[in-house]
Image 1 (cartoon, rainbow, N blue to C red):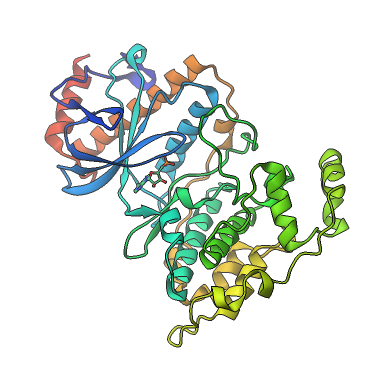
Image 2 (cartoon, rainbow, N blue to C red):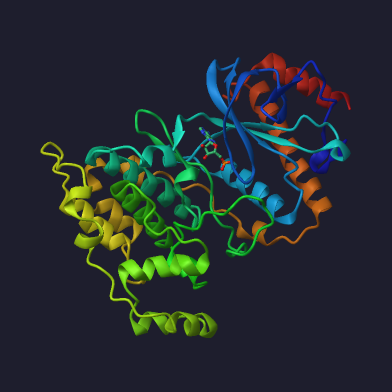
Length: 401
Ligand code: AMP
């Protein structure tokens, strides 16, 4: 099979691949990955931990089953793969490898993404009794990760605890890249319930947005760490808005004037709420004890929370202000906050309108191209770290065709 740029894909054989059942899911993967254990599943696929025999490290393998099955899945898979290749920051998950067991487009079904393995997602950690140091360090790392995404022109808009993973040493990485510019927040054909608890008012209300849309989500995560439960648990879009205004109060007229007429009409006809002060919403007893050592206190934490959970984005703090806030800046490291920006993500990719068959071809070509580049890196000794024997073998097969 030949594709643009003259790349040839040889037959991928049992010498390279094997099949293993994990729960109800079949994984057909490179032989270097063994000892699979299920660790999670999301809208996109099933995730396993595994041992990489070549690097002797544990990795996470995500199976994207027929990522081209519908346009929404396809766009998302394509976008995720493109951004994973682009970004490079300690607070964003790293792509270690990617492959498909298929040699031919007409047999192409699944993509496997290999990533660094983390210990748990933030949903599990949020439940724990965290002290100020841990809370502040986790928030600092989320902020560094989103600042890096912003520097690539990617505004997340859908940060949530299930898409943030941590290690037991409290290091943290963001797993996904949020909503595509064109995705809006519309209905998606999936059996998974989409979590909207962390979405900012400007996303719920379909307004324009800027980088600090992501500060709202960080505020919701922060509030949940303090309260021990989701702070705005809306059952749908409308209820989500109700939960916000019941606690924070109906926003000022000036904000409402910036809404589209139909949305404005709805919002203006809701009952008016005066909201509660932050001390009432997050009373002292919910916070961990003040820390003598790091000088992190409940009142500092509440001050930060109050600047994040502001409905009007023009009044809400920015990412830089959050990173410089005294509750967060205790961790400030120039190299983490101002890490080199990656290339700028080309959003036109998200605007492509392809059929399922075209997506299938495009995704297949992307993955095969990636496989080919990995082979080149490893045969040129370019620090790919992979096994030359295995990769040369695929290279030979690639050349055969
Ligand atoms: P996703 O399909 O990316 O939404 O991931 C679903 C779940 O799998 C996450 O909520 C995590 O619990 C788990 N998971 C995904 N990737 C990793 C990883 N690299 N390390 C540890 N757990 C992960």
